[in-house]
Image 1 (cartoon, rainbow, N blue to C red):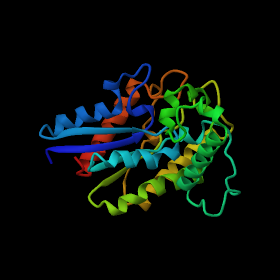
Image 2: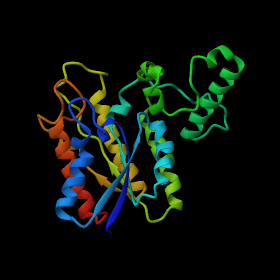
Image 3: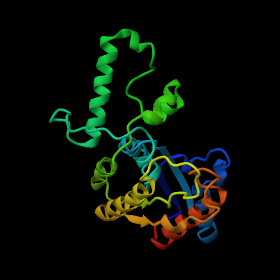
Image 4: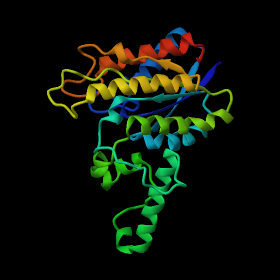
Length: 256
């Protein structure tokens, strides 16, 4: 096993942000920890951004082009908290069944609107874009107002994204659960935010069991210095904790 390609589908934790440069992310901490114990192994990362649960399917499809031997999905609680309130999608046409099908339906409708009202075409670069592309575009300011997924929608989107892997034997799936919410925050995003985080943790465990995936329990990994002050993002110390946890789990499971 001299070369191992690992695909990561996740949020900004995988690439870094203010206060945590790319070389200090938990991925790079894990790479160095694995190299210290398995110097003969070379780790190659494929990183795909998933700013919304609806982007898991597209991100996985892109990642699979690199033929990874391991696919890691980062299931975080924040995706069930951020954004506007959830919407009832039950009134959609009967043929729009799965969660990903609903996403395609909305994008088809959007394309039809652009075709019917040419003036709208001047306001957007393209309709069929991922949330990551939107975030980098002038439309990025509206991203926080997109409806958040319910726990049920979140779970369905992840399960649907993983479904194609049944036809790709030999790829190991790893599910990283959420860390406990930073309870020292002076602000609150929702009255039930802590409960939603717990529900996401339980959801991640169900997904791992359903797909016979390795589950990495990160719930109890948070410490007083885990998060950046006043925020929900891990500090450099937090990334150190998650990186060593990831390395230990991958090595113990024989995946690297």
